[in-house]
Amino acid sequence: MAGSLALPQPRSVSLPRRFLEMVPGMLLLAAVGYAGKLIEHTIAAFATAHHLVLPNIEYVLWAILLGLAISNTVGVPAVFRAGAATYEFWLKAGIVLLGARFLMGDLLHLGGISLGLVFIEVVFSLVFMTLLGRGFKLRPKLTSLLALGSSICGVSAILASQSAIDADEEDVSYAIAAILGLGAISLVAFPLIGHALHLSDRAYGLWAGLAVDNTAESTAAGAIYSDAAGRMAVLAKTCRNALIGFVVLGYAAYWASKGQAERVTNKAAFLWRKFPKFVLGFLLISLLASIGFFTKAQSISLGNLSRWAFLLAFAGVGLRSNLRELGRQGARPFVVGLIGEIAIATITLGLVYGAAHMFHL
Amino acid sequence: MTPTSSRRITLDGWAVLLGLAAALVVRIGLVKTIPW
Image 1 (cartoon, chains in turn green, yellow):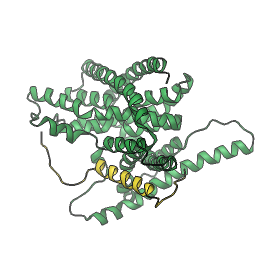
Image 2 (image 1 turned 180 degrees about the vertical axis):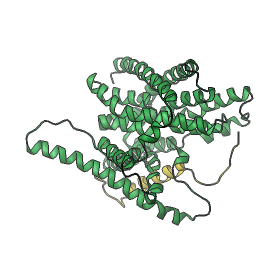
Image 3 (image 1 turned 90 degrees about the vertical axis):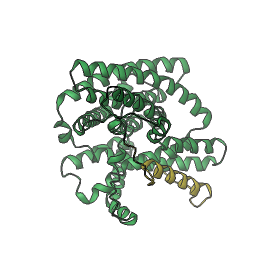
Image 4 (image 1 turned 45 degrees about the vertical axis):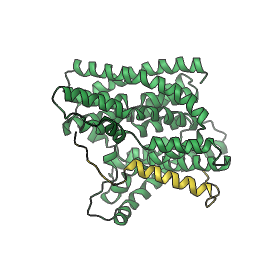
């Protein structure tokens, strides 16, 4: 996810003014997301009334499709752009609130399994993408960016490493375009494969969290399958996100050793700066829920609030995707990304099958 | 590295603050239930 893509904040503009400028776009996110929810309900009600068996397509997919339709036809008017860019904020707030639906025992159990698989996934992705980039003769730093984006957390990993490895703007935009394009494909491909293989909610969610790169797309790919799969995807993806600082630090040290980036002097400060703080919020809310700070009804309410926040985030996923823009970025990084993603998805699917068998997911 | 020290709250920071504030509002009963 892209920290710097959201909430552009020129210093000269006051906080209330900035907030007011975001209101139209936030209302657009809410309208698109809620329209998605209405479509899901309308279809379900129609099917019930007419005794039809229709596939249940979650509001998530409708919200993304509506957003895509707007951004790729009339475009997002300037007045809505600042607010539409807040989708990432709503995603993170939703993840923090989702902590209320995880008790610490579950979190340690499922998080432990996720973390173990994440280590394997990260090592495999980094090695495979690096070899693939070399095979396709991509520029070395573009290869590094693609490896980071596909192993950890998509756009935010790329942006987090941009200054650390002193990457070109052009390479960054190539890598981001490839990761976003592949994320869009995942939203359709993953649920179809999951249903075809009859994966359980937890196994599928774990797979989506391990293999889909961007946090927004990963969460959406899980939620399209089911609510429980969405929660599991968030947990696995959060484990991946938590490793961002370590991997970026490794790359920064590598490029510094080649004299092509500045050396990191204070490693602890670097790790803290790169660590996604919303993970701490998620853990804190989960801890509070586990010690009985919230009643059961309150935990459910916070879980619902998390869903409303995700609703805005999913609308933003569609609104920010301009397919023509992605197509202009060139085929080679995309092909490398696509081959890499297919390999990563296959390997992680094998891992998930093994884990589901061992731990009865 | 060009570490840019800033006292501004980051996007993550705002997300955590909003999450905690919402949790507190629900906990003290200002909002009873949030439907979906």
